[in-house]
Image 1: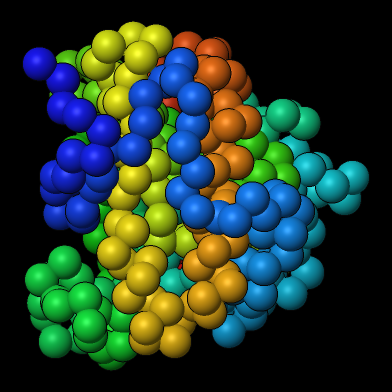
Image 2: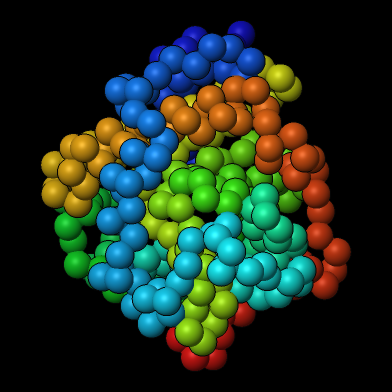
Length: 276
């Protein structure tokens, strides 16, 4: 028996999730107050500022999809930067529609972690986003993941699989629209918007859609990291993602990326550049 809408659970990473819809059904708004996508993007653009991007190239970066952005080459190694998080990836395809990358298992990354040694999920919500942090090098664990970043959109889509390459679902990471650049190392800049959507792989055509980390979005507002208006904009972005491509299964969900597999060369772990 399938769970009813409104059911709650914990994700594999420990975040709270709520079953909010199903593919093929009418989408019920997450209370983004019907905000237009352009207005919602304007509200969150300030979150992708130089104070969270130490790489000098951010100052000269350009919006993804603009005439000045150009494209990366297939097989090229790039950096995917989320403020204080940086991940190494290999380009699968890049064109006007969007960027597709593969992050092989074992690829190097930089992550921001609590300075006192605790896991982020172990820190109570009321203090989670205010504790001192440090940057450490780690690796992408578990099976490799394929990511698609549609040009100009405030989200990316991550296709997860198990160790046997069986599709597990698609993760829609809400984030500030990407910018391209890098004074030394090529790649993209964005910033995570806390709230996410998960499309389960079961029941093809009627997959469950889960809302992830709504409680964390409320917490970042209480702790002054987002304004209430920015939180409303994030909810509106989730609504637009659902209506633009999730519910109807449009691109990139209709291109078979969940079944794509890398060749041996593409699947070699990607190292961070020697110069950080």
